[in-house]
Image 1 (spheres, helix red, strand yellow):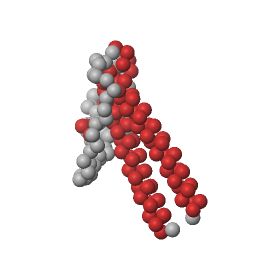
Image 2 (cartoon, helix red, strand yellow; image 1 turned 90 degrees about the vertical axis):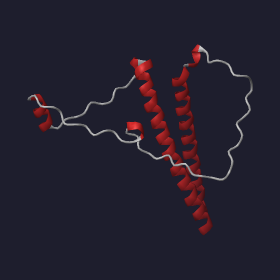
Image 3 (tube, one colour; image 1 turned 30 degrees about the vertical axis):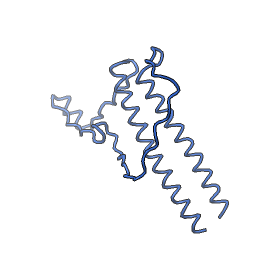
Length: 147
């Protein structure tokens, strides 16, 4: 029982770590996609929400004052996304790259370029998160049934 509990704790820690890193990666990709849309597809760009002033600050600004300075967004490159992607040093060599089926071909116009690739990455991350969530629920159910 103690062994199963320890294994379950490790699995849960891995799950939480995966969900946190995937959530941060997804948020960062969507932020970058929005920045690219600002340049390439202005109609799809979502502007940042305007700063809400307090009652005192609104009165001050309406009487000719300057608005108070806003805090600079922290995080990755000033995006406000603050999660650390920690790389763990391991002595295991990475696997070789997968073999390709055919020679390189230039991207066609219907591929959509970088923004479409970002959509694919977000979809892959979402699928991985959904799969991990289902596996976590199943593992927790199995653990509870065993106890």
